[in-house]
Image 1 (cartoon, helix red, strand yellow):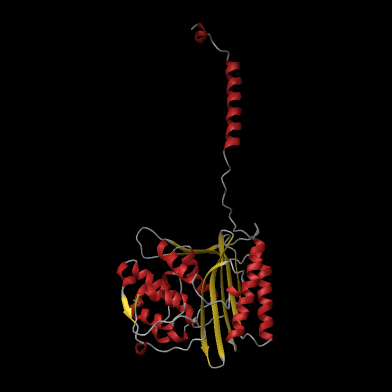
Image 2 (image 1 turned 60 degrees about the vertical axis):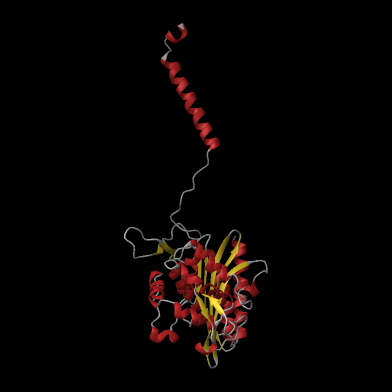
Length: 339
């Protein structure tokens, strides 16, 4: 016990302290990882370039404002060459008389990089409006879970026969369908009778609030048939689903799973490898000698995804589908290369 009664010189104490500190630093450095620090600029932008974010938050709550979408205001330089290639394709198609107009919006969810070609062009959404209808019905079901199980009998005389070029599986006269089954027919098969039956169950106030909550101008009942939208604005619906920012997570998953069953294969899917998973919806509109064909989709690859929306206007619907397919092919090749 005499050892503990001896005084230790101050110099020894200092040396011991330095040794302990060095050992502690070595251990911490070896067995801990560096924490990533968020940069001020999004990927694909130079440090000298100031780029603010456009942020949309859900209103109507007292203490919270859930995030719906966020996006840098600047187009990504990483996608500049892709933009040039698509713009050149569109110009060539216009000169060949295949296109009157076309617009494309692309967003990489992994990096927030985005680009847009002819963003000011506006188009009739056509069957693309079935997606807001889907989101409205699912939003209503969050406060009334019994809605999706409600049964409706299909009687052809109660609906308007709307001309449809791309048509596959249809409702059967006299058969009863649940609202959930009608949603499948509306999105997977783009059935116009199904959407008309669902419109009767839809609260128009919820539809208007959907547009307003997403920062979009809602259509008015009087000008519904002339309502137009841009590719970038329409893409907000898709981003809200992918981010599960507006509907509940189960409903967002259900909505995108229905879109993954969409059996239109002449557009975006035709330009992609067969094993690539895509949640997509197409829409056709127009009259007389002018047709409009559009398609929007979330393309999944490399544990991430990108969003692409293409809207076209021209004399031949089949040629428009080929244009969408070619744009999809170019985009996938470039996104794969960037990844």
